[in-house]
Amino acid sequence: MEIGSPMAAMYLLGNPDHYTNSDFTNFYWVQYVDRVRTYWKDLDNVLSLQSDLPLAEQDIPDEKVWVNKNKDQYVGISNVDDYALRNEILADMNLYDFMITYRKERRSKKKQTDIINIYWRNLLKMMVSMRKKKMILSY
Image 1 (cartoon, rainbow, N blue to C red):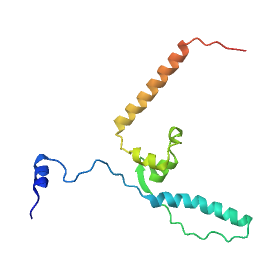
Image 2 (cartoon, one colour):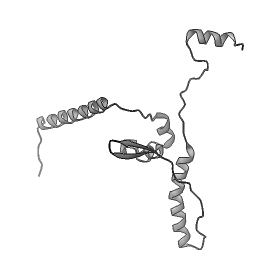
Image 3 (spheres, rainbow, N blue to C red):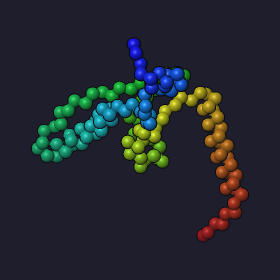
Image 4 (cartoon, one colour):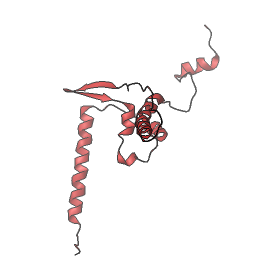
């Protein structure tokens, strides 16, 4: 098998053999569409009961989720839930922006403990600084 000189040079230099300036994220659009269709189907059925239109007869497949066991509990993991149950800070973020900025990473127990400790330490600092401020009550 013959290879071109640019590919050989990239191989010898340890660079990848494809050229792109983007990182790609897998996005399973069908899962999001199915979730929205479940809400619309309920709305269509309510509207059809109020009028003479027939009921919506759409077959919406069941959502597929990964199931992980954490200690003695089973937890369902879904990318759709990651977006639907996002924090209030991200409430104004649309689906596209969420997907291009969202990264899920596994945390070790030590890293999780460190994050919790930092959270509580910052909370205590904030409470202490609030106590130091003089507060004037107005009646």
